Length: 81
Image 1 (tube, rainbow, N blue to C red):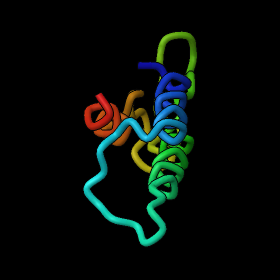
Image 2: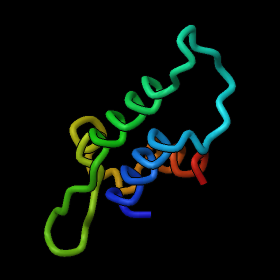
Image 3: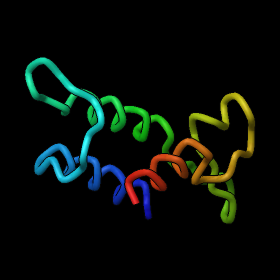
């Protein structure tokens, strides 16, 4: 899944509550969790280095040359999958 597709999936989940949540919110709203997840995905976006290497922009600052999708994005995709 591309970075834009992952963001769209999260946006879709906010719109139609298609995911089953295991936590309770006093007001019945779950959007704040999806908004937080979206912000994490926004931080972990792909960045091209040269013509062939795509790294995670956020992880690159700490780990250098972390290929995209990084472990964070992979974990999110797995759970949304």
